[in-house]
Image 1 (spheres, rainbow, N blue to C red):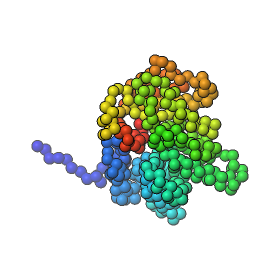
Image 2: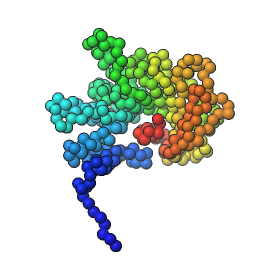
Image 3: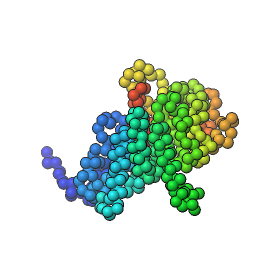
Image 4: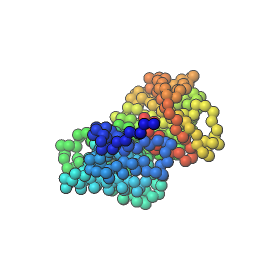
Length: 341
């Protein structure tokens, strides 16, 4: 038997070593992973190896940022302030987070805690603002969205006050997909009820997505009802007149296309595909009364397929399955894997 070939990592070509480091640093966000373990742990450990390795792996670490608790929000805001200090002292440790962060998730389960630390959360939101506005994809709960809209509006007002000639120039918002992460039927239907409608942030959003849990969508998956039925209340909540740049409105939900064990779904969860229903907003706004909703027989989209059933409505079902647990489910991993886009 021939002896195994061994080599040192330092003997690898530099380009290959960098590729390995980037791959090792990338959080997988697999829905099968236990999130009690930090998905960023490997990347953080690699950042301690050297300044060169740190600069190599930081873009992978920062590509998708998940802020699930007030503590996470505070820690990330402190990291941004630290980078600002590094920039002022021209330190080699400075890294421009806004150039690396592409996707941000902000969601909290304990809204009582958020309200208790309202002033602190607002301060952190101000620190995060440059990164949030630069990220093409933002998933956020309704409470944090309200704070973000207020923060953006305050920044816009200050900008206009400082420079009258700049008052009508576009606000630097690069968000392409705004995803609402709120849970519960009543909350989902009233996302914008207490949020300022005439904001420059909402006016700039081209694509809006809800993460759906409501009744009716299983019947849409099976082709039993028109998608208009479960969407009606959701669409009444959207401030169409103020979201002037909106092109699509989507809802992602479990694709329940076959009989399933409801008890198992409630007690331990089941694996389902993810379906996304998308509405053409300009066509809908043109004449809601004559919008071409799908007519009977209603469509059923198979896993891994995308179907356009009318000029205004399309469906897409993922090839991969995700574990849904009716009362203890979070969309974070599904979103982080890109299955809702």
